[in-house]
Image (cartoon, rainbow, N blue to C red; front, side, top):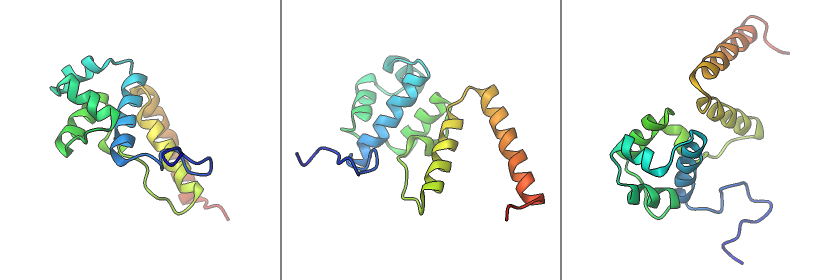
Length: 128
């Protein structure tokens, strides 16, 4: 089956760009407990069009991505598929930062504080 994702392929690599963006929109929307009609109402995007974005049959414009990101409480880059990374550490760091964006505001603030402390520690006492 040519359309099936191979076991060795990274998740999402066998999908089109539109399908991966749509999947991210759907994933974040459902994590936030929103129905499509709720997100449509918050953004002014027609529910049918939102459904087409989520299914990957249509691509949202840059303006629409901005509206969707704001309504979902994330930055636009969180809605975009992962890019190619040089190594697994970069990929894991990127995924972790995307997950932090999805946390409720108090948890996100706490996580940002912890990251700042870790960075300060490495600046004063770099690992060997």
